[in-house]
Length: 287
Image (cartoon, rainbow, N blue to C red; front, side, top):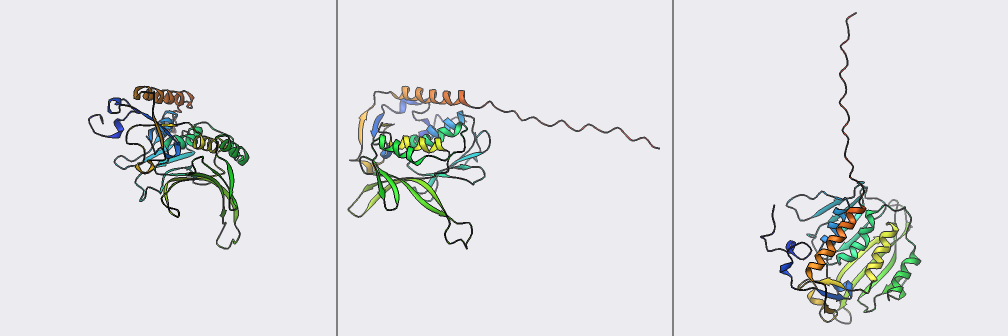
């Protein structure tokens, strides 16, 4: 089915209809750049061998890893833009989960999901190492009550390591302490009011490379590319925008190179072998 004759963002610069975009902008800080094109995440996973189980006609994406152990769900029809649009977790729905609300920049989500295409040992992330990544990118560490946190240089984003409680049953009064890494991005409206833009929440028991990738791409000072109309209107005055020397065609080529890299690293496609039909038993001779 062709989509080329529709006026839609599906025909944007990520694919081949580059004539609809005249130029791209470099936007900083990246956490205020807006969501961007979700295909930056989904097409990379598909190229890496993930399969899409989405229902035709319903606005969602359901991706499953080649070993059927991980699921990614994108449901942009959540009741509120501040609900979790992106969810990543083991297929068993146990162990860990990662959630990202609408308007989370897809490049930051990809920092987490790209690493999931390569199996990694089940070791927990080192909090000290993650804080060093943030501090190295100019996000100074500080305390937020009893939790640890790091603040972005423009003070519109905060990365926190927060403790939660897991209760075994309703009679468990103490619970087992667990940790999650959260990001909250908000703009000041007044002295006592904030405009929340997006949030994320990731269990510390998530794969260590994925958590490191998330912290790295969140705090990276490098700009993100956006075309006209992709940055949120209410970030005016907080963004630094310059014209990118990269053309939309070059941007498309870079995206294709990214997909080619994922394809080359993908595990070989496994073909299901059908069991041989049982051989008919010879008829029994009458005694």
